Picture 1 (tube, rainbow, N blue to C red):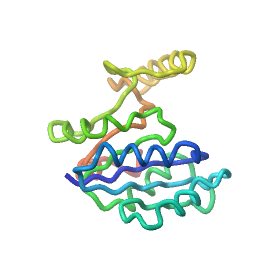
Picture 2: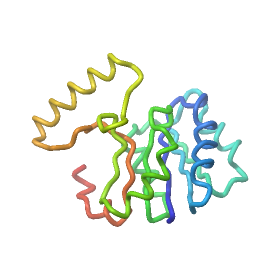
Picture 3: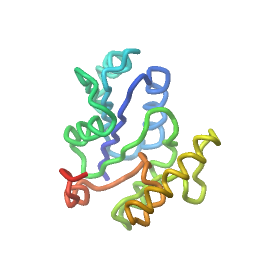
Picture 4: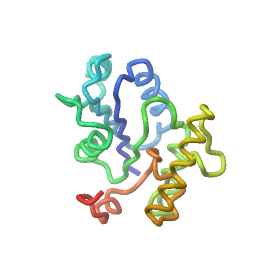
Length: 171
C-alpha cells in the first residue's frame, strides 16, 4: 500500500518533529510520503521542517506564502500527493499516529475511515471542548440532515479514487 500523510500546520514547531518521528515508527513497512503544509506560521514551523527534512525524500514541506487556512492547506497537500491513499491528520497530537496502520488495513473494506472522537475508544482531553464540540455536532446533524457523528473530524483515510468521486468544488 502507498500512502500520503498530509499534515496541515500552524504554529506547531513544538509538535511536528516528534509527530513525524512517531508516524515513521508506525509505518515502517509501508511506502509513504509525509506532506507538511505550513500555513505561514509565525513560529517558523515550516522553516524548521525544511531544515530538518531537507535530506529526507519521504517528507515534503510546503509553506504557504500567506495564510490560506486549514482546509485550503489540506487541499494543497492533496494536490501535491503522489500516493493512492490519503491520510489527513492534525499536527497537534489530537490524532494518535498509532492508529495509522489500522486505518490502512481497514480502508480495503470501506470507502473512508474516520478517526472520530465519538466512536468507541475515541476521546478528547479537554472536557469543556468535548461537550461544546458534541453539542455543535448535534446541531450540524440536524441542519445538514446527515448521520455523520463527527462533522468536525480531521483524522481520516480515503483513497484518491474515492476522493475524486466527491463534488470537490462544492465541498
